Length: 62
Image (cartoon, rainbow, N blue to C red; front, side, top):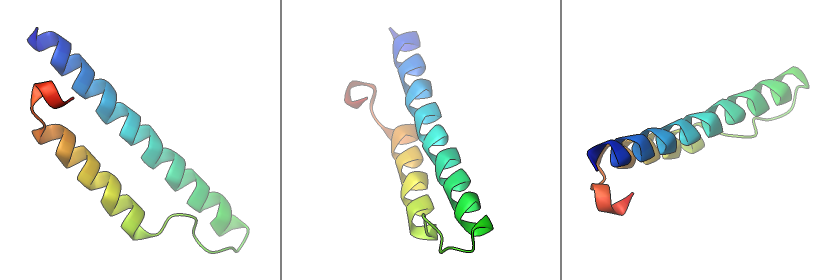
């Protein structure tokens, strides 16, 4: 059963990391077009908190 929760936690972490990569890409695109950033640092801090919460979440709350 522990493998189930480890796998689920990893999948959730990878999903958040994919979101972060998308945010970075959007920012880079906007930077190249001389526009303001689509995602300010607060958005990245929120994603970091999401990752911390996943790291500390009880298995049953995943």
